[in-house]
Length: 133
Image (cartoon, rainbow, N blue to C red; front, side, top):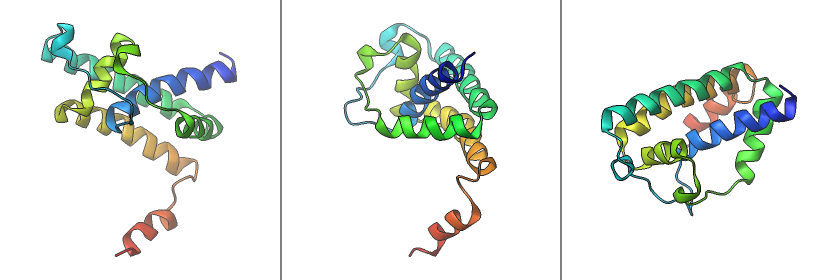
């Protein structure tokens, strides 16, 4: 896979997962029950998708991770109706704490580890957060 396709692939997966955790201004809320998907199935799909995104983040290079973060800063949230079925399911995590926790635990951990590995989040940066009162 070429580098640009790798970034797009990683970026699209991470964007969909992270928009489920971090609300965006124009991002509407999705409800899996409206899609006719049982809660257990939604949970299994969200878990699998989050694991896939986490694996892609873990396997990405530091340069790809930096590019991904730059792209995410530029992007704006779309309406849920414009998302794929998978995107709509992940977007539903914004209103469902159980799903939000799955995405945050899996994707957030992989992203934090990658940021530390790439020296984009170092102890000095984290220490500054504790010094503020």
